[in-house]
Length: 370
Ligand code: TRP
Image (spheres, rainbow, N blue to C red):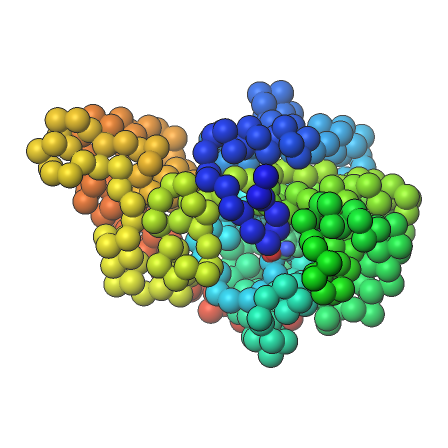
């Protein structure tokens, strides 16, 4: 299985997610979980209904604790090494919804050493991208007085000692097995997972009270927290609960994950209207037929159509509308170009609003940094 935090070499299919549930030992999000969440949130986010968040660890336990008055906090993160693309937004938009509905704190980690250690990125670059990425995160609307940014190098005085406590319980052979490292891995890579574990219990240390933690994440990040869940009880903390998202597909086809390393596979939050249009018209893989005539006769295939999938994952939250689009595309009534124009309009509208909020975020930046 080639799904680790550093590479996803598997085709994105239903059977991949089934395999991940089995091999990672995570639990599928079922109706019971959804009902339990709904008890608190009254409504259910479309990403849950559509099983874009498809699996979890210990979520029912977390809700038990919460109902007993032992309130949880949220934790997620982003390793800064470049601009944000729309695929990054999937877990964050859901995290924002959770924060709003449960009215809880969010700790957001910017591990600015991660990409320095794992890729060819300098600390000058990560410094720039930390700031840039923070503005995008703030623009999504997280609560100002309940959201705390941790930057690994900036908050090293607070985090390093705690990371050492974690690291002492992790052997070299464990990280080799979990992440697939060879003897050629640098020793920073080997230590790194200890830093990513810290925000799952740092708030408990700061408040001097053991608090449950819920981590929304892309499923590729699960290996980190498998380790953290083994170690944290040994330090006197709860195992963090997790809720796992699927990968948003890239422009070139529904079977490959959107990736920052392929500039034409994604839309950046900084793309102009013309760029958005060009990329989608030119590069978005279509489940439509060769000619319009054929399309009207045979209908399109939404399952392999990137434009449809992007609407499903992010840009068309309305269930009734997505259903209608599905039906009319499948029947052939809706053409590929009409579907693409619908998506382009949605994305451009989103990006315009986002950029306005991002501009305002500059003034608030310091309030978010812990
Ligand atoms: N490793 C993540 C990345 O590559 C960043 C990250 C840090 C993270 N802590 C996290 C992601 C907690 C999800 C949850 O971007």
